[in-house]
Length: 390
Image 1 (cartoon, one colour):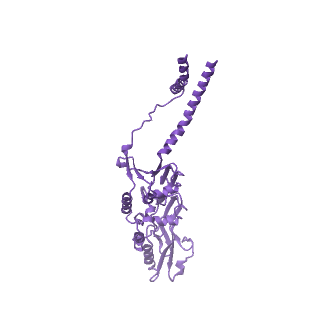
Image 2: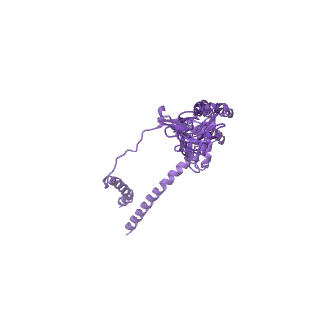
Image 3: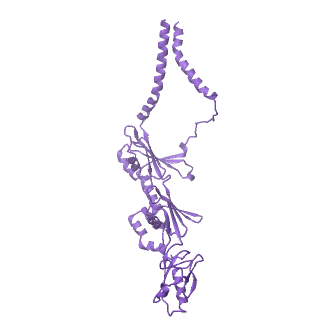
């Protein structure tokens, strides 16, 4: 009888095992389609490089950044925007008249030519509009081809032709309305729209400034200039912060300047921080300490101060998946290194949990299961004892 009772007291565990086994095996016979899968994945340890964040690493990255931009000091920035460099962008620039432009022509001492009457000459305000065939009409000289020519070339021809009728004519020609050539500014900008090209050269920064500047969702690191079938990717942040104005291209008729949104220009802060957050990097740079601060700092009760990691995707041609940079902040002064370690877009900042915190989580996950098994076992034992008593 004793053996029989002991066997029955063990039966709840056997019964539980049978139920679980049937439940798992029953999935194979459940109705509906399924896809077989294997959750095992290849180890990635060999595809990841781990480097500690040290003073030497920080200094090396700073030097690499300086070499890439070539100009990082305030003096370099001043030189980059000096009048001489601004003038170089305009060297050789001349506006060429186009269809739809309005020309203002003045012949001094001859007001009848400057403000002529009659219906032969089309007038718009104080000027002559360029016809669709690229010409204008002017008294005495008739039609003159002007499209594609500079103001000086038109002035010289008018003066030469009028000399047949007027002694030593003094002629002045200006573009009163710039209507023929345009640049299109689109995307994350305050006032997107169409900007006319004038006799004053317009660069990328000029167009952005005229359109009200970039808005809060703009990606300062990748502004796209489309010219015909070509695209130029421009880093506005580098131009403004580092004085690298080599990308400040002169715009031409038909150019499309598109300011994209932030997209993947973000840093992700995860793990044992007070407030996991995604931080945009549109018009600013972030250090590791900045990112931790924006996330409310580490959770002191859960975080492992030795396990502050920055996961950075490796270049496609490196054969690696990522480089992981580790900051040991058990000594809080190490956060000074974090303040000098600059993050890059798509970096993942991850703070691991302390070993004790991980153990507590395991216990918390197991507790409901243990309690359930205990309750089932106790109920079965009580039932057996009650039946045996009868």
